[in-house]
Amino acid sequence: MRVIIQPSYGNRETRRHWADTLDRLVPYREPRYDEPLTAAERTALADEHPDGLARFWGATAQHDRKMDTLARGDVVLLTGQKHVRAVGAVGCRLRNDEFARRLWTPDPARCLWRNVYSFRVYVPTWLRYEEIWALPGFNVNDNFMGLRFLTPEKSATVLTGLDLQGLLTRPAVGDCQDPGRVASMDWCSATTKAVVAGGSGGSP
Image (cartoon, rainbow, N blue to C red; front, side, top):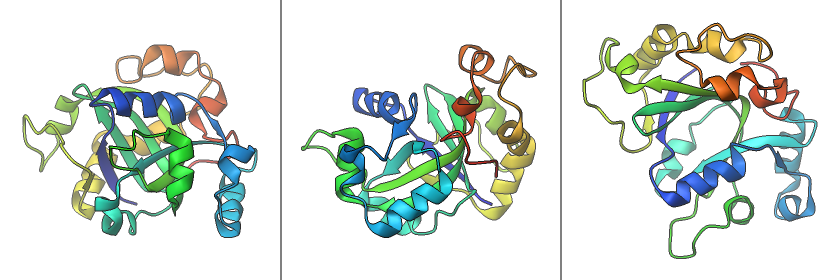
């Protein structure tokens, strides 16, 4: 299991994408989303998110080689405004330009997020960068620019130091054990579907 750090909230367009496919579950079986999927992609999504609902995020073509190594269960830290705004465990990974266009309706002049992945578990957070900087091997004032796949050693440090596995497996309803570390409005009022993407995807 690796940790990936991905800047995700730095401009107006990425914030719009966040609202489209992270703040809400995407009904991927609706014709708009289903039409461009291959049979194999439909099967993979159905196996991971059998209720037809999932959260999605992506990366541009310049990251194709990195994204080829993204695996189910990898943990992604989505960053912005000097905080980790959400933590998720990867579900499905696919490369489908038209599906990406229908998810995010990007500006034609901007890069397409053709590498699409879903979250089998997704937790809104509000972790300060300082919590990562304090861990061994990290530098103060590192603003985590660019998509970053951590080494196995750094991944283990982050998973343990931030208790990410505990965060991703913690019950969603009525459990606000870490109000200073989890975005209180999203966490305390969440239903199980707000944490387990698709409602029945399980935990990593």
